[in-house]
Length: 291
Image 1 (cartoon, one colour):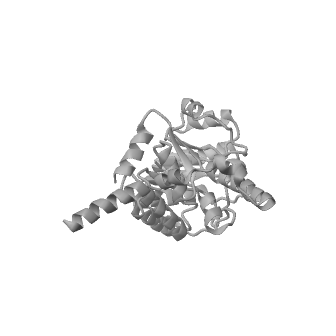
Image 2 (spheres, helix red, strand yellow; image 1 turned 120 degrees about the vertical axis):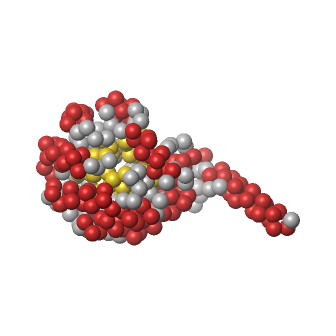
Image 3 (cartoon, rainbow, N blue to C red; image 1 turned 45 degrees about the vertical axis):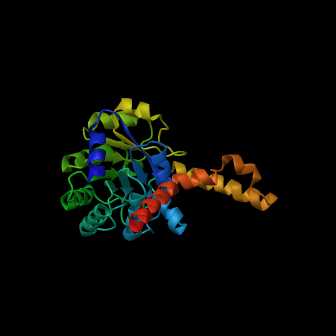
């Protein structure tokens, strides 16, 4: 699949890969229109947008894969997806890889929390053993049909057990053959550098606003040595706050006039969704049928 080859090639390149997050196909189309090379589907954002619930393991693998399939159909970009813990044991992980791969996704990350999991920024995380997590990573690697389908090993051990254990788990994932290593919730630039110093596999970073993780420019991350950075919830956070302001204003004043300058115009919105392409295709097909 060309998208997977493109993503694998980007990860091997010298420059950092930036994958903004979205929770639906519209968000993915905006990311594509803005000129990014890769899009990321956030599990937290899908949970909020699909069922209006926090990220505590309530969304099923099937629901996540269906959302991913819709995004893949909407854009031409490679899609990386949150796949939580793989949704169970090694057998569940194998099916998870099969389903995401069949949906056209280009890569997934699998974390070392227990099932059901929580958002990595929440308190009270509980983890599986290193051995159990590595068995899942190895099962995922063995299950993929396309070698360019990326398996990303994520550990949430930093806030639970500290940096040394997080690095130990990251090095184990590297030894197991994970395509990228993703250590969640690092707390300083020095910690980022320590991870790069100890792990030779390509590294992924999560730029989560309003959290303990260092807020950095992607160029700074690139200079440190990171190969992939996601902005998982930026658009979801902005959507929630902006829409709350809009609805509060509408309730208070009876009009949305104060927000008109911030709204996309109908014609631009239709163009973003490809309406002109649809019309052109209809004309060609209609003409062909009439001849």
